[in-house]
Length: 568
Image (cartoon, rainbow, N blue to C red):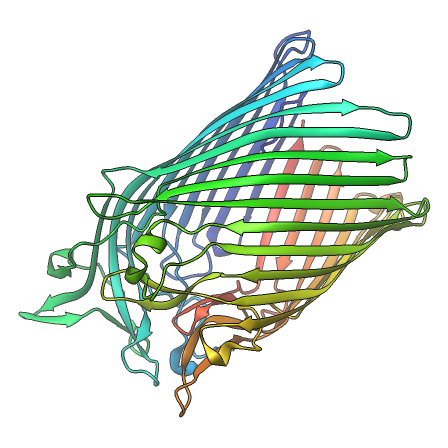
């Protein structure tokens, strides 16, 4: 977690935003020294937002308070303390159903939530960091952070199936009544040694980090998929043709037995690492690193919990070389590791598998150029990448009779392509930012035959954006500015299958591609800043993504936000 750091001179900023969807937002940020010697610094951030959003039955209220302090008791010693408290009151947005396989049959405000639903959560974290200079070229860094998350949830959500498939107009539902808390502890310690040589400089970092997660033993969960109506037990459903929004009588719900709380397996992970960043004759910089990861987790249900341990060595290497004052070449290689919880190893049958799940492994290669033109006013970055992932853990969308979600593992997926980024302050008035990504993904091995040769779920082949900004700097129009931008996302494959063909092969759906445009007007006068932002100017109906026809996430319609900020 990276927070805004305390300041050595007093500065502050207050902002107000209001606009579409009954949105009201206030932010406050100020800080400075508490003593004349500037040995004690502080910063205070706070924010409040209340919005109905563009979704029906989905009001959201957020509060965030984040003070931070820096103490410098002696030369070479620094202690940082950060506190973050956030609170959310509203609804969980689980998306919308796609009626009769028609993406645009329902308004994008359509929801499955009920007025009696709620999602209230609180997060509190406290962290402390010590930086101690041991010698001119040696320093010690220690940190600890504790985070507590608490939630109270009542929600109606889809069972990820239609009761009348393939017509797809009536959705099977389930209800959760969930109350819980979990705790996460993080400890980090490392030494940094800087050694300057005649030709080669070394910057060596060696350390250890530990993270531990555990849910509270008093966590409670109830789940219902049926209710009693006139003495008969009937399934919970939601008719997309005749949606009903009401306050539900939970005493009529039929509660399932032996429901496991859906938090992750308790775990502890320990990483030991060393890295050397070498600088050779000012032009060449090389990074060499090695990390060992040790992950231990426990099963999440049963009186007798079982542990599982997984280990991995993760090397990484990279270099940059200055070809000339304008062009730098770079290349990097790294490996990745995503462990699975003990329940996926010792109780894999609960998740619909016929053998234990394995940790995900991956590696990435990247190379390209970073350039600067027009006296570095225009920055252009070009990179080529190749990524391979194996044993990706994927939820199929099916909910088993055991109450657990069904999972599978992909065999192998490739991702390779090009990224182009352009940004620059071309003149005192004109600024440009643009990027384009070509990402070709290919499933090379899968437990589902029809998935071979398909793209990775949620990964568009093409994605591009651009933003142009012009601010007048002279005469009567000084401080007035305009901005406009465009954003394009290609079609993407859905996570889950949408049915079968006549031969029983799984069928895949695709989210439509979309293009949206945004615009803004700015006016700056001294310490006062005003802005009017219009998002989705042409009111495009589009989907950010989703899992399948039972869970789709639409993008926001045209909306306007007006902001006022003052720096002091």
